[in-house]
Length: 270
Image (cartoon, rainbow, N blue to C red; front, side):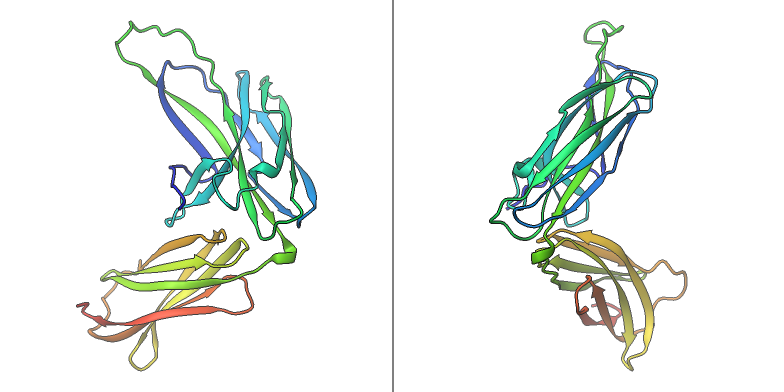
């Protein structure tokens, strides 16, 4: 079972109670590395780290795993925590750097896929600012300030084109409220490949006519990932008249077929 650890999408900000120090400004590019390589192959990528501030920057580079919780938020895990981790296949250099204002440096990352593996794997490089602490001007015990430390989470995804199995399913569709109309969809990536998914949700009356329609914005999922999506009617107007309806969800996950799920419901809700 996976353990969820709090994180944020792409850029992670940690707060720690300590003496205030100047925080450097920097950028990292790219923030996503996709390597389409199969078992026995290797590939090298280069990250660019730039000091965009006015202070000298010290930064460190380290490996982690990552996943998404059902609400879509990024979860950061120790390297090697996941069965699908590729952290042990990664070599990177340097592990730390000091950059003067305006200076740019590269981080080289090489991923070598073992001979006996299949499916997609993933990990993360975290590039974290290391603040230089200064003496506090306040008397001891009089309170401390908040130090904000910025880190960029660079997602690494190894995709195996030879074993790229796209598969997904809708586990549940439920009605949350009748006014405003709100629905919940539970969706699962059941394949071995990273998916980009989109779709529609329709409400049809007893005669089969579509009375409301919503779009599901494009979202990614990793193999084994479950997502809970909530759709709410933002339109101003009258609620649906009392009667019998059917909600239908159609999802395109990039495979050869579309998947569909739904359920009947009554207005007013029981």
